[in-house]
Image (cartoon, rainbow, N blue to C red; front, side, top):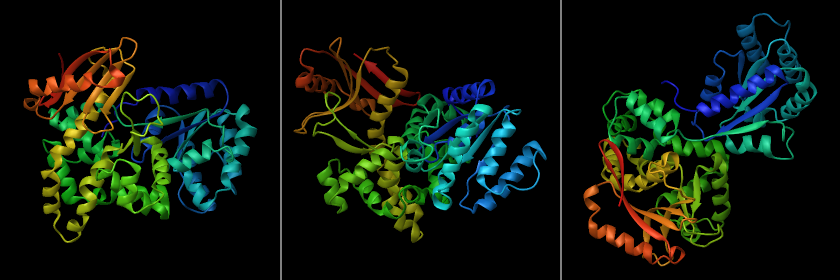
Length: 453
């Protein structure tokens, strides 16, 4: 699959290489959700640039150095003699060699040193501090464990704290890049755009899996993945295991509660049976670059401390996995995959309808198709539960609010529905005196449609 987007990130990495060539050595860190494309970004960024790529396997140092020595010889030839006896010797060679040969060196799965050789971080710090002024080496560190990479480079107690010039936090592919992928696959319908966003969320690794099939809809490709590939059935659990180790079970229970509609702390604790679920929620908000879950407030809220917050699984794939896959894994185990898939698809439209609201908000932030000035965008609900608005765009300076009714089927957005929407907005205390405008959002074959009256 060809590479999509990430133009700003690629240019940023290349600009650091230009600085290194004319100045001295630097460190960059690339973090983000698993499968988000950190390694691919690093490799795309160094095309036509001298580079070395080292994968940090969970091996003894001697084995790693042997593997890495072969990689140096493969790329640059016999530029050293003998063998490296330590990481320090290896790093000294790289920095010294770069003085006349400016280059990029990528260390992938860098956090694996934590498991086998945690003392090596101090050697990276020592050699970098001693050699950075007299060398031309751009060090790029990638890792699939967001929490560990954050600890290595942002914890003041760790040796490499403060050494990185920048930490590039890689997020999901934009909606426009997702649409470009679909077009390359010969998929042009609005429903395909919505399904791709709602289930696979612009995660490049999942798009690669979809690209293995040639069916004319995302739905049939998803069906084949579910019927023929094991990875999707274990993905949610495996990622939690890799991120949280033995304690993943508690995080699993908390995510399962949220996926099943438990939105506030008390409900989550009751469903999961975990009395201190708040601590797990805070950790889930932090890991993977704040992309697993988030605590959302009504768009009119002035403070993050308000008690009207609701917890949601922010990552669409995780949301889909916990809602549709996890509780049907037993069917797969007894050979009833087709029944499991049939059950998933029977309730998929309600899930897509909710995701359409998020897709609209994301598109408005990315593209602002009506060029509307705004400083807040999101959903609204009140404490009584009798007012719930799919999406609102607010301009506090001009005292304007745009309220939107979002549905899969445009026929369901009747004039009565729109009148009711206007009435609900008009009684929101925080918006008294605001000019109210309303709009419709729905999906057609040609894509997401937005109308403002």
